[in-house]
Image (tube, rainbow, N blue to C red):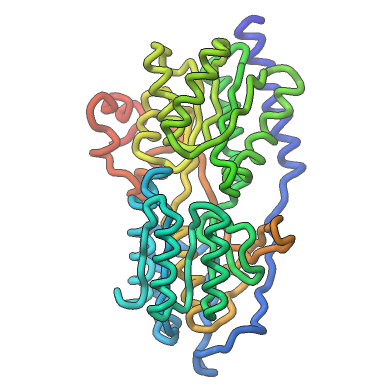
Length: 409
């Protein structure tokens, strides 16, 4: 099949798919939060701030509206982050942004605590127990795995501590907990659409696509896959693209590299990969470069808008990345924690959705913030403008010319 003919067919399939996705998309359901189990601690005359999930900005100004709420609350807010290896985001973004959000609302350093388990479920358990013993009233939990996360949350609730799932849903956790994240199906949808657009832009004549998922124990990975598979399955069924396979998923880059190298050896016709985050994409790209694959010939995808991911986009090895402005997620989580700490029902303008926990068959009250697909075309107006990455870091070395071409300065 000729390049021009296939590209036209692929573009037509993308256009048709866009209509299908538009028709099938749905708006997250806003569900009011029950206040039956909460005892308000604010005075009757104090107005409860009505924060909207769409109000948060890069300057953290909204957090200042919660200072009265923060002053009325009691107890420690404990934050439990998972590791420093599956994604650089937890150290680079989440921890400092959460700290900035809490401090912006007026909390002192003795009123919140942010820990990283460094990949150890037992360490996270110990950190949680320490927070509970220190008088925590709220725990934000980003678990290493659902089982250990659910055990932590059960113990917290037994001690009267309110629980928030942060970024990852703790399947099997308490029914009355909250969840703060991005719309993860939409994250996957953006990855799928980005792959399709890139296939046409890079003139991949007959796409043979390997699907590489995240760790199957992570509910987010399941939701990402739901999004990008919904985009790509119609192309596999109609014929413009071939699905080579979908091996076992992982968030460990070294494992992703080994998996891809094995698949590439077994299926040398692979000419595109759906990679679910920047770190896995970077591992795949290292294999491609070792095999002398040229830029803008072999699409990969990603998420997290990491520095290596953004540089790989500029160098022509990655189509784009899903930018999840973590300052939005961090502020939403901090705001929600402040309501719970003060014994107040969070407003439905903040708790704007629900997420089904299939393990317990319940819908979990949720706060969703909005992800963005970033390419070289909008990098300057998104991650650079927001200060998620500095121009000096992004444009160092052999990336300088690509930055100039992308009007990043």
